[in-house]
Amino acid sequence: MAGTGPLPKDPSQRRRRNADPVAGTVLPAGGPGGPTPELPGGHDYDTRTLAWYETWRGSPQAATFLATDWQRLHMLAQLVEQYWQEPKKELLSEIRLNEAALGGTAADRVRLRWTVAEEEPADQRRPTAKKQAATSRRDRVLRVVDGQAEN
Image 1 (cartoon, rainbow, N blue to C red):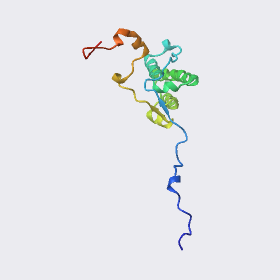
Image 2 (image 1 turned 180 degrees about the vertical axis):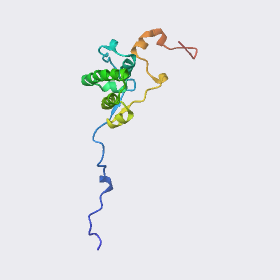
Image 3 (image 1 turned 90 degrees about the vertical axis):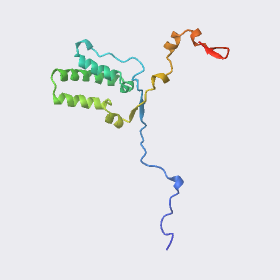
Image 4 (image 1 turned 135 degrees about the horizontal axis):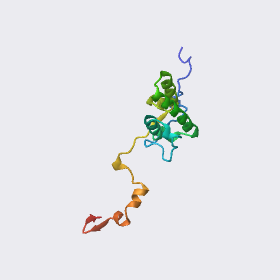
């Protein structure tokens, strides 16, 4: 006998129930926009440790760092320094684990729902206020003489 089951669902009422409840974060490609902390006692570290820290300091992830994240990175620098002095599997494992928490690899950033914004090509970037101030008003005014533009 027809019509004994439930009514078909209205297609206009369908919606995805497994949508991601957490919004992602877009990180600036150029890294943090403001100042970032220096590595405390930086003069005492190997140049490879300093280069490691500078890479993190200018990374897109650093734009999201809070004081606790910087503190973790400063403590991690000591482990990185120990690793350069005497490489051990256990040290590398601990470094990798901490870097993962800070979004160190592409897989870590996917897990954290972070994406890096695409950097604009240099010829499409807007000039900064400092660069605009460097040119005089006369240089910025375009004058038309006899149908041709002059600087």
